[in-house]
Length: 341
Image (tube, rainbow, N blue to C red; front, side, top):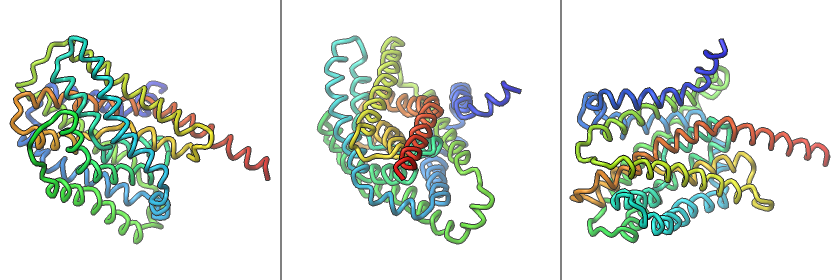
């Protein structure tokens, strides 16, 4: 019985392992142009489902109050699009002295330049019970900022002379993020009583969709014949990615919980995930656009392909710990407020 309960509790991590193994065994099913048609089902349908689901589950008053939380947005966006790429650039100066493949190092720099993701940070914040509205706003706002800022950062740190079709990326973002979110909110207005009475499993729906996104991502990785890597470089990159994520999560935690920061424990949860996560959904198309014609494009893409599942895996493992910290902190705050009264 204990084993079954444990499996049920950790079903998402088990799901990640299973979809990666499935992608390894049969990558042709989930590649672009394959039977699953991820260029439509994932790029449009899956991301839209995640944001429609968020719009449906989010209380409108929470979303409007999140818009006004300017200090939180400023913290997340400046960490993601300023501090992160510069810190990565400095780290790569040191890593350049090692034997890691130089194209993988360039790939690590591209990870630093990416905007926050439009799904995983929101799902993990929701799983912990943090400020989901702030996570949604920052994911959407950061993605829009990223359309302009990310190509400029890539050009600044890596250099490429290609022009980026802002309008097509912007319109795709608008259709897959903003429109479903608004539609979800409109539907919530009509279905509020029913939703509050029945309490549908919104978190589980989003998690299942995310597993589908991870599956197609790995199908693409495993089916790419150009990815020839020496295992040592790959292992070093994986270790580096996990180290970066943990360090930056601790860094954002320390900054957002220091006295006088003005952030609640629920805000801190949103900050930890939104500031350290990077978008694969936006990242891969951007790399393909900015580095069109590069023979080493697949190698440059590898760190981002590793970073995305790594951030979900690490985040999922840390969910119980972060939730325990947040609830303990909230109880302590309530207790001190009662004592003041």
